[in-house]
Image 1: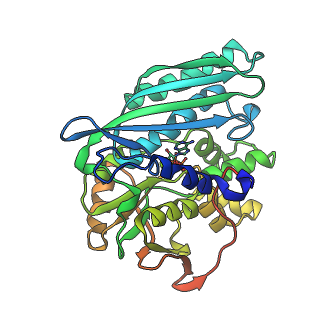
Image 2: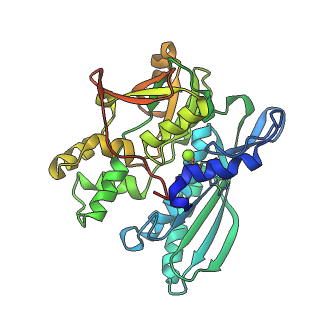
Length: 333
Ligand code: ADP
Ligand code: MG
């Protein structure tokens, strides 16, 4: 059997049980956006790590080095945001091909520095080594949160409203422009390319949502909503229904999609790398949470569906059952 037969998530499910913690262990291991370790009676440490490989996660000639530095750190900060935490430290390990220009590295770390400063997450270490071919970039980020405010993927409850904290599909649209050789930076294209190259981790929104008890579960959208909702369903043992007409699209994505005849729903649900937050909220508290989120952080909460008591993910369009082709990102498929 090959890894591709199991897929990324099948593989994780295969080895993770070896490392399962005892039911009374205060640590939280494999399976959420971050691992969670106790720091004191009321504080926890969050830990997350992400690996970016050249020609797998990025193409060097398509992304400026400072953008790649930003993105490599941002995707980890997004996992801290997804738990409702505050980042405290970053570690960066690099595998560098010998031919890489020093100016490229300077610019890469400028991008890291800028985001590290604005998020209060200094770089405190890492490792540097020569790679045979292709850049290898790994960040690990630590964060902290109040112990009883951390939001897990496992907290979703039947009847909750499923919501996202931003537009879907912009990053996937940017990637399509790059892949199609249309990176013309017009007023419509620029926001898509920016979404793809410089995702903004939603730390303030994550914190605002995490402190509210009506928010039951949270994760960030990295693989694509369809795949990430399935992670939520797996961990919470619930089903979900997504109303396709509620998926939020940016004006830029609508304009570019019209021009290129892209299927917006597929892009939004399976594209991935949105790095918005996906959460489930007690239905009767939704309006109040949305109002607080808008007031405190300027972030719009878009309801896209509900949590159900089945084990299925179903789609509706204007309330009628609908089907969708395509799946979220899985590294081995
Ligand atoms: P995210 O997209 O939030 O970074 P992933 O989907 O990459 O999360 O991973 C799912 C879970 O599996 C996470 O808890 C992650 O820490 C864990 N995981 C993934 N790969 C490994 C690995 N090689 N060893 C241990 N844990 C892993
Ligand atoms: Mg995540």
